[in-house]
Length: 92
Image (cartoon, rainbow, N blue to C red; front, side, top):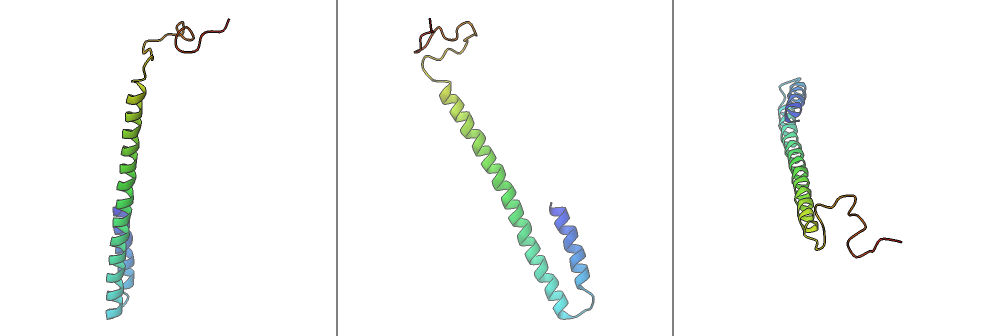
């Protein structure tokens, strides 16, 4: 991502110097400042997305640890045990 922005910046800056006028040099410097800001904004958004993803993973793991502590939950239940224990009696 950064390499692409750098390459684009080089070509745009090189294209801006069609003459040695002071305005061209100032415009190129302004473009460089704006491109640098956009690049940093992109990195911040990327890292924020990673942080949100990690926070989601932590929340899911906390929820799973709470669900694993439910009283009356049989961890080793098989298909034969289903419906024969708990609060709802089997039909019939």
